[in-house]
Length: 387
Ligand code: CAA
Image 1 (cartoon, rainbow, N blue to C red):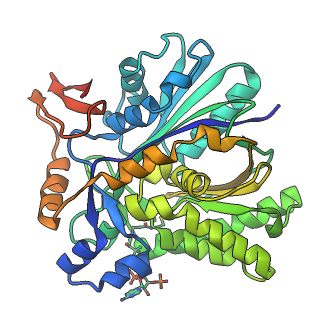
Image 2 (cartoon, rainbow, N blue to C red):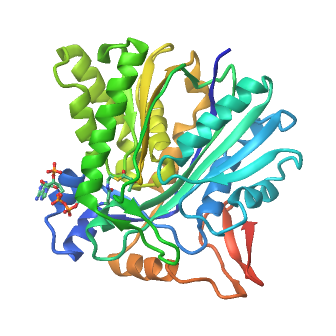
């Protein structure tokens, strides 16, 4: 039985900073950000777009096509949690009126968490054929103003429906996992921004890629030329490009060109949005599907990395007619219609986002009609509304 991705919804907030503006404000050569880091723009979430609101928006995109009677599981993957105890998924479930009888919870392992959710969802569908699972990854990447990591921030969410006979990607059997307890990136309780050892995290990412890719090829007896493309977790696009260069080492010209072209297509949305942590790999997959020209049966490799650190390589095949399930026009409009912030405006929004919310507060939203947003807090309980 094929199990995999049947729907993909994507959301990123309506504001961005241009990397040339940021480079100029930070006295850096713009080419360091555009070429050296590989980012053009960075999404900025204002206080009305927290992880929950973005997750609701990504899911609302395809909800009218879900058979809710078959939905049995809802998992919310995030490292931008809004509560130490209660799952973000319960807010989503209420906002979108999902059935009361589903199993639902939040899951965490840095940027690996949405892959963990995907594998749990896949096992769930295997054990409960005819049932489906909804998985959401939603994050705001925050390193701090004037830090080396600032250029690798971003915000957004991906929501996916996992079911049998999927319409977009059928996952293949097999996976190669690798983990170690290390301190490359973490966010201690009470800190609104991540702690990171940037160059170390870059090196570990590449070590974990080599380890899992080699193991996956040995396990499945596949060769690099069997892949139409490989999608990577993209904390910034240059990071994935470094892993891509390792993958194509020693390959024939045709394979190297195919994987290189598809890498660039997979990085298109990330260049515009920045790091969305847990959902970054899945935004790369969406970017390749919506901007590329894949054929039914094409094999895509997936490299998932979560700091701390946990990595996994796995693969899937593109399903015949997948294009009919995608909404590239909607996503391109969402990216194009964003407001360009001056660096001062971004700094104000960023600084406001670091503050704890008071017990009672109300927010207005400047997002488009139909967008879900955090409308405030009453007695420390967050309230979500649709505009
Ligand atoms: N023109 C073109 N390129 C230039 C340039 C210029 N004028 N100036 C510098 N560059 C290049 C450098 O040569 C370098 O390229 P290479 O990596 O290919 O050598 C690149 O720009 C970056 O330069 P630096 O390493 O000097 O940059 P930096 O010290 O400012 O730090 C960073 C970069 C480590 C990525 C930092 O932004 C950071 O810490 N980011 C957050 C951490 C992160 O994303 N880690 C990734 C792995 S961890 C992970 O994946 C989980 C997660 O989501 C966080």
